[in-house]
Length: 492
Image 1: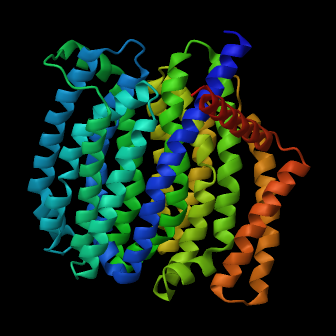
Image 2: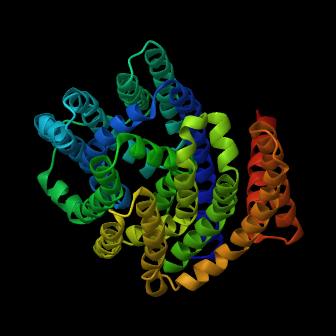
């Protein structure tokens, strides 16, 4: 493959990433504002209750979102028979899963000695059925790189859910305000996606096609299941061994960094797999895309995560009120945990795109064994110790995820770290200067008004001064996009 074709592929990744990122930012921006309002209205214990329930629905959601959808994206010549077969298969699977969790609800409530969880679990689990309706539509959008379609669906669902959640919270519905918000969001998202995406399931089904897709998808499904169970295991343990308030503070500390990282990470994730899959036979092209993804995403993510950790106290006090101050240590740990996620995302998508779902599963097993050992070693040492164990296991996982691509792509872990160093160095230097503002002992709002613009100015100025390659690349991409828009406007 020529360098021109490779560059076009890399540019395609960035352009679609920007569209996906804008969509996620719009939706998550609304979600963020709503979560602040609800956090000020509702008590931490309410969030602890809903966190316990979402552990189970999230695990079940893996069966809907992983495996077959990724198999459709990865398959080069997927047609209507493939998409329709997966659609009907998913709907059957979602119905069975909902029945299982519906019948299990009293057992979940008994485990946590909380009878009210039974009805909450049964109602919130309806998300599984709704998600089954949109899963193949999402795969179709990703397969055909139609990421603009996500914008209206996601934003519409988020805004509608925001209104419902806030009204119900102010009327005193407590935990049910959060349940309604989540259900409404998924339902509207699904409806709009069905309206804007033209694909519809045909009256056709092939068990052989399902078997073919499943041979690739089941390994990703098991991998995602391992990852989800592992990530939610801490919440299960905290909910059982500690208080719901402890769980709420832990989750609230994760909320801010997760909100930011999920936007960037999901944008990269949804764009990289279909783009890399198209050039899966050219390891050089896949390496170029992987390298560009790591450089660009860390340039964006590193300063945000490090800056958020520095500004944590003023931010939480101002935005969430002092009742949420105990979440600050967790927030800082999660900031450094999530800062290394670009390495995970880029490497794993390269492995999936090249059809190595077997290797993907092996990596997940290794990472989870290490993580569970660390978790078991810290579970009785306190919630903070459990958070630190996640940070350590994430750092180890970044090496594990990158290791195979030394052979597959000729892109070693040490090369990847070297590509991240300029962003990391600038972020730490920026954070050191910004942190000095804390010593002025100003009010929270004044402190943030100084710290945030100062941090942005220092980071951009330093990037320009030291001619950081990622900064110049992003700048050139923005200029190209604006130039194309201008030409399109002139042609009209």
